[in-house]
Length: 282
Image (cartoon, rainbow, N blue to C red; front, side, top):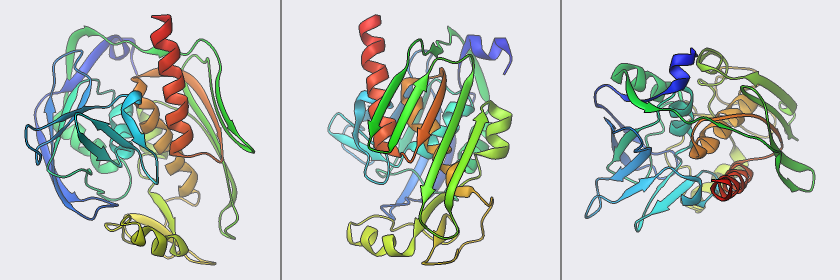
């Protein structure tokens, strides 16, 4: 990213739409990206509800992290926003309206790839306002037994993730990446959600995972993989994709994120912790 890119805010140049079904709800959804004014932020609009309630993508609006990140405001909610938020983060979109005819964005292929392609199709529009990148100036941590996430000061954006899974094909995976648009698009963007057949039954009972398939989810049964993987370590790459999306609720940051065996709940807790500190400092 050039210095100029860092310095100014961006929205999209023109509106673009996409329709599909939600990963968990299985509901049809028409999603439209529209340009937004400088300083507006990322705003979800529920076009299917009376008064078209708006939900801002902010850490304080996270209301649930069960299997996905849910945002709530003005009596409405949107859920499973992390893949789209991840694409917005790495495409450096600061201001955008995301109109949705249902509470969940389309699952697309289970990664952030389609969202990035849509944003490229819409084009980037530089805005007059300065982009405020939050350079983390102290360590933030969330611990729970042997699981933890730490966000440390760093000149750039880096994520180091360790995943430990008892599945014979997964085991311990570690991935460390210095993030920019290029490295993201090559290494992280195409990685899809992972699920296990034993979980699917439970998810369905909870009314979740209804839009999942072997194409948009990497499915493992007891001892093998049922989907065609895009990477040998797709699971951990997707975990990093999720971290990027969940932390973009803070806007652009400079930090080194170190995560071990964590998920959406940890991402949300640390984002809220950073936001509370930042509000106090300001």
